Image (cartoon, rainbow, N blue to C red; front, top):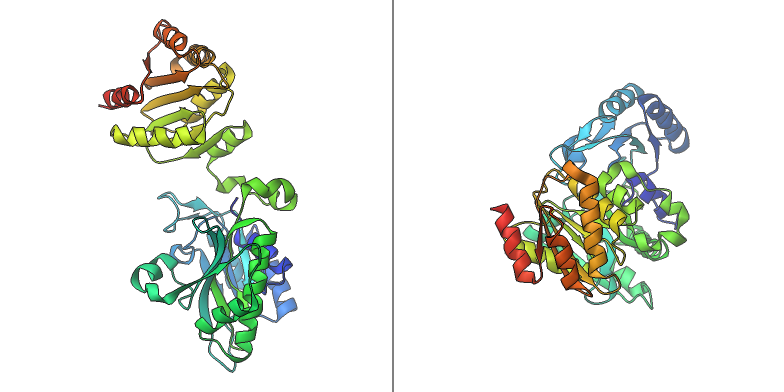
Length: 397
């Protein structure tokens, strides 16, 4: 589950990570009130107006601007709220901005120069360890840094059974070229950041940039946070932070009815039981010259109602030109699945305007094939993987 910047900063702050303070606003009037409150609390005279969407690169799309007075706060907030913000991480249509974060100006003059760094915490699945990735090139797209100057990216592996050790925090601060009070501040920052990552059941904490202020404070100016969906049952306050407006509406609908659905960019819809079979099915579609339009795991029950719901969800994607149903009958019998497909097809009538290929293997697979073949419906049945691939290729050509 992705969070907005202001929500991620709330979590960081609760674990003692210093953040750029801000107040969320939903309209220009709230933005002005927030700016006044920040000035009273922090003394800041300038304010940063930040669009709150689940995408990076907001500044490049005009979603992050500096206001030097209250009139500009109102004007800029009015411009950003309601706009469709297009960034390198959104679709061509962009994402609608429903709220902005009014943040304090932290680039104030002082005895030393400001510096920006990149710091993230994530899981290295291959090694079974957590990893802190960091760089002196903060404020830039980390992908560009990795491609053009990979020697400027450092990593620190953390054994989850032990946690981050003091020497590791010091090594990070040293590699970032810090000394004096800024060095001490950075060791505290990364230690608290790692604690926040572990204790919040996050799968990603990305802070870009981490700022060394002109008076040697270290703080998170931005925050990209992803919480592990599987841990939300024990983090009810985090679950309440979910903004469904930022998520694919088809995925939201599927989740509400208990279907595991992930939208993709292809033209062949998939209905499969089991994640492993689903991945193999998507490979099959690619080999046949198509592209999977979704990952959809209907689970161990595939009765008529569940199959019909799955069909309706797949067909909400206008790019779908064919549907491949690939079910292994283990817990659920193939003939029951076949009857469910026939019943769902009849119930939906003219709503189904694309060819459907059905491959059923396992318990009562032969009976299932007979049911499909004798249904009189425009459904292509298959038994073998290659046969299903050939039929996908046939209907797409």
